[in-house]
Length: 423
Image 1 (cartoon, rainbow, N blue to C red):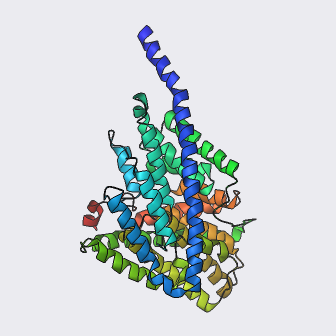
Image 2 (image 1 turned 90 degrees about the vertical axis):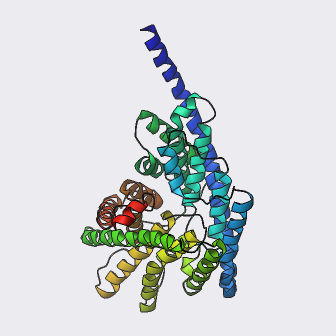
Image 3 (image 1 turned 120 degrees about the vertical axis):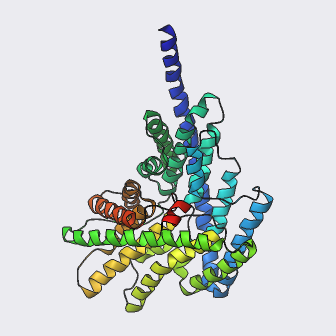
């Protein structure tokens, strides 16, 4: 009996230490994320301005970025290819597997170089894997912390998303919904402590929001349109997933890495030259979208960008860029929502509010792409700074996931050759 109480007391003593480790992870992950976000935004803007002044530069920019990533991988990062969020998922699935320390600078610099040189993706995956690595390394500091490896990795992931979007609820839900193998009190404690700490660091640093979208109200008569937006969101999310999987499979025929980079860079450069909105993560385009002029040519351009974005993203990843579907989903969702609102107002005089469709479209595409409606709901509510659109976001996100699952049973995170053989 005495031994039983002794073991219980030892476990209780570990809880404060687990919280302290999670808080430390939250601080480190927030600083890592904020620096990556700031330098990426700065240099992406600088190079995009140079491209706008001298359009011919786009011929060299993506190629330069992919070559820089290749050289870094060869000389500094053990010549291993980054596999995106799959690395964190695999690490969580294997009890004795850990993320090596070099994954932090590898994803940090690869994500930075991919986006600033025009690669059509974002730094979300780089952030998640780098901060997951912070959690993995923390779990190796003492023998007993190894028991909480999964909790601390998920804590790093939650802190990374929190710092990136200034959204602690979204960070917590994303770690639990997409990554956690199981959910218990230790998971909730560790993830919550890390996310709140990262949020506090952001507040202390005066971090600026990624998106500047102001939502005031929504009209109940628009609810059928939101359901329709959710359906289209699910359809287009599978187009993004299929594009990435298909291009990845086809590219395996090309064994020469330099040829992959060259071919991918040429196609990406051509598309960006025609549609500059495809440059980088494209968040600046989303922020400016609400005030865009509505003309037939503009609507056609929106539709073309919506269709081409998955192809350019797929080529970016195949050529060696660091990224995934997170940023492309938000980008495509915003374009889909604005396109739908513009069509409804221009040709059917529906009188809908475009910014609402932008936000709800982002939630729908993200939900369909990663099969995580709760993450989409809390992330997009945080993006707008209020819960005004909570009900329509819930509706569109759930509908999008259902439609996406009916079309494809997997995401880019869960895809394996088994699904390819079935299809």
